[in-house]
Image 1 (cartoon, rainbow, N blue to C red):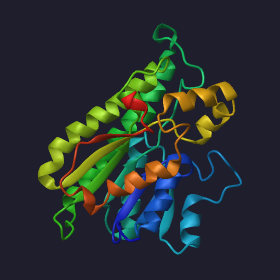
Image 2 (cartoon, one colour):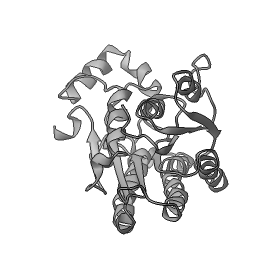
Image 3 (cartoon, rainbow, N blue to C red):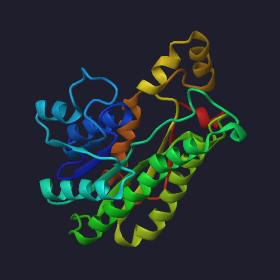
Length: 264
């Protein structure tokens, strides 16, 4: 499995959940991975850090602490990738927060600080990641295919369909999906592929507690034609495709990976 061989990838939010699954899958496919997150163990202090798992299985990976909503820290993140491995080929803008999902509220009841935090962490971080990754990709030698880079933004089905009570989150992910399409158009002449994945309800630490409620478990089954919550692996496999030569003639796609949720 070497579909990403000779590629250097940054994965944000790599310590757990979807980001961890993507980082591990990228390493299996031959990529050198910079695992970025606020800390090594954001959800489980006992879990082996993602970059150490990769190293223990023979892959190449390093950890970089980063608040991806902070300009200077995103710049340092890109510089760390280039300093360690000489270039940057892939950026996965995955880091984000699911504010409002546990206690949905109508928009007139939404807290302004919650709105600001959600837009900063979910949307501004994608802008910053793209900004500094694109600058690096433009100045480095292209691959033999002529491609200069691949950006995979993790959006949400909430950017495609309405889900009650999560206005700030939906807006933040709508910005991600729109920015993906715009950037794809602007950088297509430079052979930089920019696509987004819109996960459905995936079995991550944020949702696991809720899924233990029998009523909610039944609801998840009803909402997804394929039944129940998705697995982080499903998102990771599509993230491999979108960073590989398989997307030779593909950019600006906002792809739901959602167990059929959005076709209902």
